[in-house]
Length: 374
Ligand SMILES: [Zn+2]
Image (cartoon, rainbow, N blue to C red; front, side):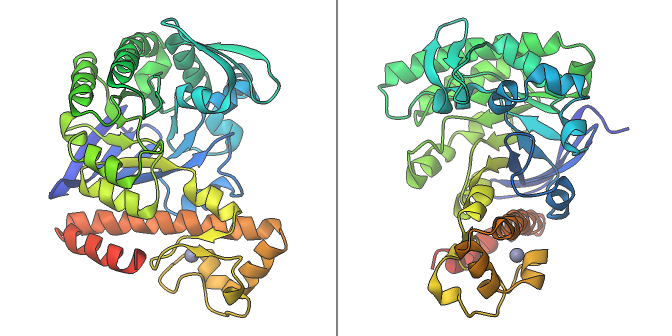
């Protein structure tokens, strides 16, 4: 049987690392990209097709699932894995970020957050303890601490106070998770570094989390509108403040060029809605940059979306057909583009893993940027 949680780094190249996380429900090859399955589904894809793209782990959203169908209901139905038919690892977020970004009437106190559902206006209370309970009821494999993600452009003292509260919430999350009995014995808990773009606050946050002790460490509070240059400037120091022998997870990132730049700076895990959401909006990611499949130039193009892509969509369907489906609002267009985009992201991650293992990551990144950002 696999261990509860074990991370081995197989090779490093510069700051980039490749390795394997072993957990009860399977292995996660890093650097890893986690497709987002917001409401118990990676939108427009069956679980077996998500797996066939090479995804080792998916992400589920606590906020959405607690509101509908409800965590207790998912637990009565056997947990999220059984409910959605995905038997490999699932990481769940804590709900904190989406309460801040999606719900109405938020009131944040030391105790937690009171908010109104964006679905029906019903009132809910989320605390570190309740977030741990919900993630346990869902049966999450990697549980995230409950934290506050403040708006990035606030004064330093506001960012500092928010980060300090998130560190107290991290301790409460740790205690809540540890009281979870069998679930705590079979799953993992990640802490989340905050501190916006400030090196000193990031260091204080990293030290507070390391003192508590977690299986892995996320870099939170980025990809919230600061731009790639500021994000990379923060990633020049933030990953190195976290324990070297634990996975580092950059939450909510990102575009393909974000992933390459973050791996280059020592990040191991990612999640983002971009490949799925863009697929539903007619955007395809390719090694030569993103394509808008609505564009008339694809109308009679018999070639695949990407000549270098090994996915079923590219092996079977033309740009012209996908262009037609997207322009017609056909569901199959969203399905085929989502499959391609998730596959492309996984091929990008595999390319980075191979390049790190073979000590040629700098050349891989240079080739990628030459083609992708041209
Ligand atoms: Zn493809």
